[in-house]
Image: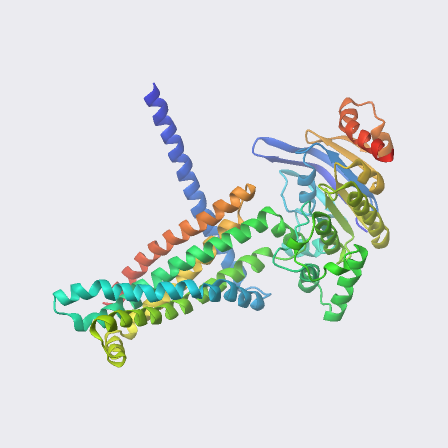
Length: 251
Length: 266
């Protein structure tokens, strides 16, 4: 499992301040959901954690190691223990589902062909898409792409998984299935997860902890139940539509 | 007052364009340095290079075949009346062969290759960038530069000289066909005339420069695609810029290399 500590992180693009002195600690085994309006810096924060983006200032420590001062070699060693599910799933277009899943195994680990086959079948079974093994990404629906993306993320059994809007653009049933899948995987693999989402239903299924970002700062951090009952006008406004959807769904 | 505003606008646009130009030049230079830093380091992606040689090179064969054949044919057809006017028809096979070997074959093949391959690389890598596939590779601890860029540039650098040799042969055959149709010349005689006219020192510079052209096509396409921004609009722009910049660079580098060749071989 992995512990993530974000210290005074700031990031801006030209004059636009996206993250402003963010500090956050995510304990081992925690599932943290990050909420915020579009453009509030949620995805930027995730990309900073894996050093896809360099911040203007601040540090991010994963298992005590500062990701911004690591050599590329050490950073890649660390990245092998991190899974990242992109919003668009980011499946490699030119490769079949099998090749997509085998790709990180071939590149980073010395598994035999038979071991790779076994792992591919195992993860496809987990996401209930065994029949899609020889399909190309273009032949898959949005939900199937997300599931295969998830399968590719977990095939290396990472200690830390970052999810960038895992349920966005999916119908409510598929969203719920993916959320439940994330919880099952978390239990199976015993991972720490950071989930960026707008989906309160998804968050309620997954989260043990919630963070709300506004104007580049943390507006709220704590328990998810307390979050929806807060009197803060921004939080009330932000969650009102989500709560209505949630209630409708329950009805 | 309005004239002053127009002048200011003109200066502003010109300075923006100049900034973009220098930004591309510096970016491309750094990208090339990055290529040489990566190309000698393991892992060596031989399988990927082979795959791209097929994708980028072998699949360009139909279009360069037609082009090569027509260059030779048209060149001979156009030159024949002029050569006849000076009573130099006997030199026609040699003239066609020399033109094709020294200049037309390498440059036209490179321009066709740039049009098909550089834009393709730009669009493919651009799409991968905007759909976060390159980021996905990076977070999986895989070097995307090595896997995507180095392999494609190497494939282009290897394949273009091969395609050029093939085009030269086809163009010479096209030239024969044109002369045969008007003069009914024997193929052995034509070939003898070609071999007598073309020397080894004509062939070497012509082929050697295609290694540079192939490298330009690959590196420009990869640079434009790898650094794509602004979604699908950016992909279109990357594809277009790849062709424009690589074609322009091919012509500029050709001019420099011809000057060097003339200086060395005179």
